[in-house]
Amino acid sequence: MSEEILKFITCKTKLNTMKFHTRKWIKPEDLNPNGTLFGGRLLEWIDEEAALYAIIQLENPRAVTKFISEINFRSSAKKGDIIEIGLDITNFGHTSITLCCEVRNKMTHEVIISIDQIIMVALDENGKPTRHGKVKKEFVIDRLGK
Ligand SMILES: CC(C)(COP(=O)(O)OP(=O)(O)OC[C@H]1O[C@@H](n2cnc3c(N)ncnc32)[C@H](O)[C@@H]1OP(=O)(O)O)[C@@H](O)C(=O)NCCC(=O)NCCS
Image 1: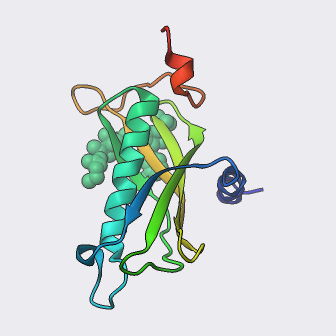
Image 2: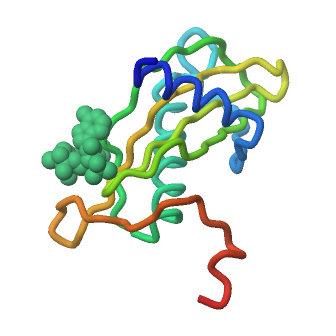
């Protein structure tokens, strides 16, 4: 089975356990001329969410976005809708982690976008990739008493 297919399945299997930490309320300033959610705004929210997730998981404030796989806007949202952004980890690399993402419309229950791979890289103080040493997802409870 190809690596591409494996990554896709891995992301799909994450949907049951994926955490949707962030909700957004669609306001007039978030709309495109068609009156629906502007794609660039959504990508900004996803990128910020991925950065926060990576910074927290890698315990490194210098985690940056390296790669985002295919983006397919499957449905949209309109003013007043509430959307939720979910992320999960599909792979721990040496200096990177791979996330997958799904954004849902809470009003219509439709998937707005799903992204199979968002690759975030941990950098050192010189802006070079640095090993993060992480091998599994950590929760607050794992870090208490460290
Ligand atoms: C992030 C950056 C330092 C990485 O530099 P690089 O020379 O590609 O680094 P490396 O080749 O050592 O790769 C680092 C990691 O990224 C992964 N990677 C690099 N290019 C990749 C790509 N195109 N697709 C998937 N993963 C990739 C590598 O596999 C490696 O992961 P691993 O260590 O877990 O195995 C550099 O590309 C950069 O500064 N980019 C700009 C980042 C940025 O500013 N993002 C904000 C948006 S503008």
